[in-house]
Length: 160
Image 1 (cartoon, rainbow, N blue to C red):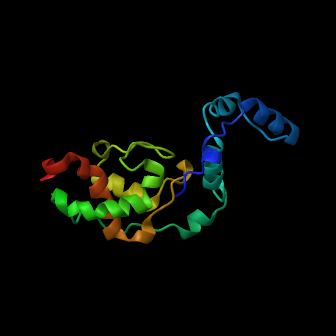
Image 2 (cartoon, helix red, strand yellow; image 1 turned 120 degrees about the vertical axis):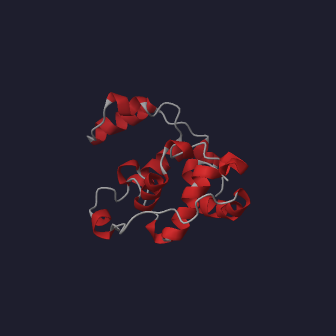
Image 3 (tube, rainbow, N blue to C red; image 1 turned 90 degrees about the vertical axis):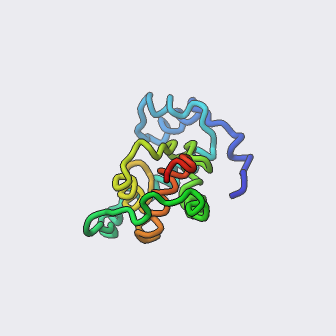
């Protein structure tokens, strides 16, 4: 994705935003205005895009259900076997969570902080209230590859 410097370099003016919100009669809190400090137009655009449709009940009607017990099909996978899975992570996760799990739009990812099954459910079902879409469309096999990549790749050869 291009850098869009013209969006990234334009810092938000919370005083101007407050005036516009007042004129338009939109509700806001002091905490919401304070949260804008240090943000730029790119941050605002991404937040807007994440919000679009979030209050429409389509999520419930299109939700998928995990059936049966969750079992990692790749326990103890070799580090070098995970290297091709980086593409899955890059194409589906890195835009929000960073190329190196450092977080950006989404939170930093610490694979050790979650159990495999919990991480699978988060990726598969998404976090609608947090703006993360479900990735069930990838299928269970690819989601398990992302789970293993996030949880174990940075552990290097120690995963074996």
